[in-house]
Image (cartoon, rainbow, N blue to C red; front, side, top):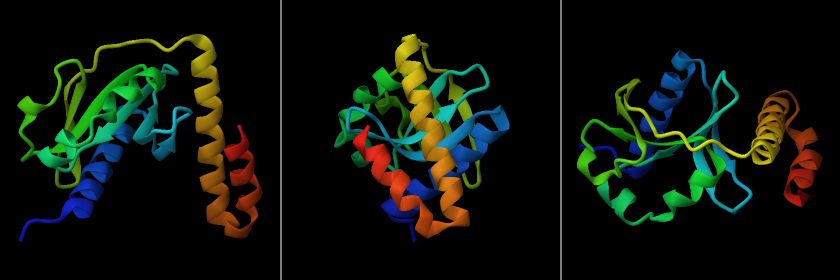
Length: 155
């Protein structure tokens, strides 16, 4: 039996996050961006650049979700992460490609670079740090994080 949408998306995301860690990137899941979109994975690279990785569980997921171009303005590089069964010719050539199989993923195509402006990078780095620190704090004190979440919504 084939796994459903949520299971496939979770497996791709997990394998992609492991790839990010192997590459020395710090992946953060489900990052709300200032334009109202939510990045499946926003990864901070050792060079201070951001890679946005959009997880697609199948062709229908890709074909019905045309908002992926909205992520470009908040990342230096944009990637799609799919599983091994995904028809890769559907994906735009101007994005990077990560393919997941089981617990592993491989970077098959680098993404073209479109560097962020300095002010935007700084603001995104600040947002990334607050979100990551908040998630870590939630592990230690789930009840104490509500104030920080409220503050992030105000920004």
